[in-house]
Length: 232
Image 1 (cartoon, rainbow, N blue to C red):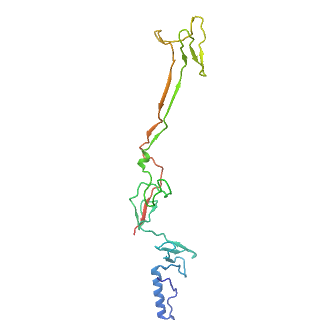
Image 2 (tube, one colour; image 1 turned 30 degrees about the vertical axis):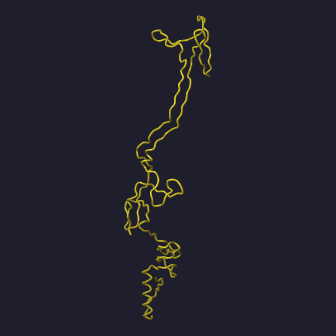
Image 3 (tube, rainbow, N blue to C red; image 1 turned 90 degrees about the horizontal axis):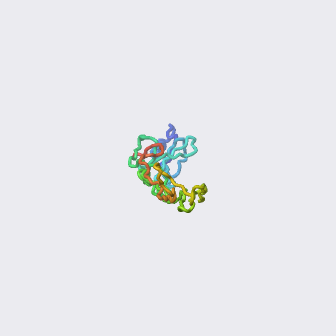
């Protein structure tokens, strides 16, 4: 694997065998893209170097010399397992769309929770489960008294309850000979109740609201793309 390139590989006063050796070395250098574990010494802007050192991995990495000839830039490489999300519906030449992974969000693997899984796999809750969940509130019960009138018998003054809920005797009326009472009369004059709302205790119990989530497929707006990998 040659990294030797002689720019002046021919001149009329050169020794032919030397020039031919230099030309052969130049061709070998071009053919191998300056393949080597160390960078070539005689650099130019745009020079290619296939770095085979193990510092960045064992597969090798193609690099190109920066246009100011002061740094190396890595050329993006990948195999069929190196997949990229691309914001487009089609591919450039040399790429293939992976149609096996669809209708998913992108996430970084984590140290816990549903995303605590290997990269390159699908994890988390499905859309159908997310939209089919239910909401259940806490169970509760309560009782309360709305009594406004207490009939305590024919010879005992009835009571009403003031705004503070305190039982208060009905005021006396001169024509009443015994306890003071009131009653509700029907349209025919009949007494409907001599103890209006006397024991109206209301007790209610139940659970909080429970209901299934709407089946409508509602999701946030997303920039759609495709999962692509090199066609090699």
